[in-house]
Picture 1 (cartoon, rainbow, N blue to C red):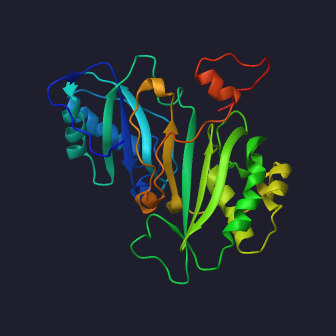
Picture 2: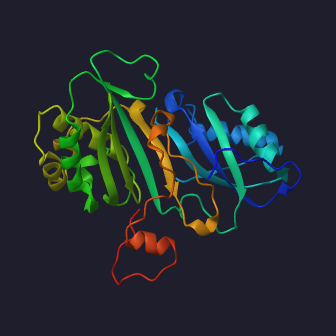
Length: 307
């Protein structure tokens, strides 16, 4: 696998296209297009429309909240005009603000859908755990001046793995029809002053990761014991839960798809964690109804596919 791929400038791409997009969410009110505030979706559609010379609407693998970053947001759109691979990537990037970039473009079959064909989403939350406030990393990490016990945080987090009702970690304004989600894994590791919370699931509720992180920090500080996350999960009541962690530490790092779609593999972000060396799709997905459903495999009778 390589980071350096040549971009074709001779063959026009037509039909449905998939893009890999990276963005710093600091200046945006989230991914989704809004009438009253700047969004990443609107910025990307504006740049794509200039290259296509026609209006373009994109569909994303998942929505991110205000201030949240992404290193592998997958989107698709139906190209209204043929353009080469190089024109789509370089042309769109030339028209984008400096805090958004297209990393690659691929032709995909007409039945590909960035959201409805995704098998899993993955986030990484970064906490800079040191006495002094961050400077160079200030827009990409959350600062905690109190010593954190990452091992205790990891132990507490394991109560969340599997399929559960995550009402205790759901924002009051969440629009999802169900609070049930399947968490594939959640890990907490320390790398020098960085405490990284790495979590993957079939999908996430509004503020779910940030609410989980808020509770884990209370465990890391020693204010709560290892059973705290299990207790909150059982309550199924957000009003009895913990604080919401800041958006600046949260990074949407992967959206996983079946290999048959042929999407590029990339090192997982953010760049601060490049030393970990993990690429998208390296971990096996668990056997669960939603993954089977998205892959077109037969499911057990009565199995749920909640997203």
